[in-house]
Amino acid sequence: MSASTSEKKSNGEATDLALDTDLGWAIRMVSTEFRRVATESVADLPGGARAYLVLVALAGGEPPSQLALAKEVSLDRTVMTYLLDDLEAHELVTRRPDPRDRRARQVLITDTGRARLGQVRQSLAAAEARLLADLDDHDALQLRTLLARVAQTAQRESVAPDQADC
Image (cartoon, rainbow, N blue to C red; front, side, top):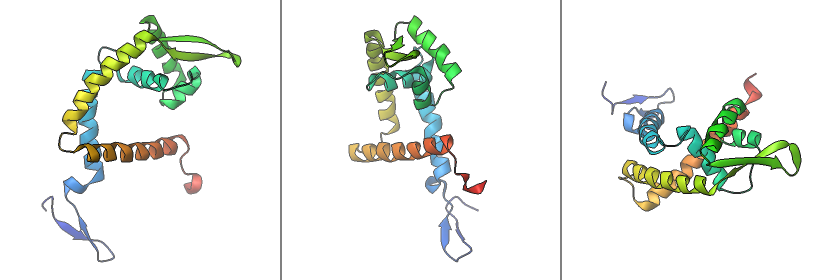
């Protein structure tokens, strides 16, 4: 059977079995290539891709607690502690007591961290541009927007799966 063969569903409706219309195939291909180019782009950060996600999360606003940051970037809190130790040793982040809760510590990005994040973002943007080369600017923006929405749904599902099947 060829990749473009159609098959009838039980309701008589034809389904296209082409790989180029299969969501799983597309996600796998994009994910594999993106992981490769992204890994190269963040290779000089201590902690690689995880460190990049932490720096991006910190660059955006109010300093979070370590626990809130771990949840935001979907990392185990133990892994987060070791990662923050490495980032702090390289002067990319700093931690301070939370003024609202002395038991908690806030994580802040340093000026050095912002500069390194800027460099990594430039390298990553060039890699992304190669991956999105067949899309115009409007389509690339639309893809990013739609993928972000799907990712948010996936994140919610991984945190609180539907209990209806239990």
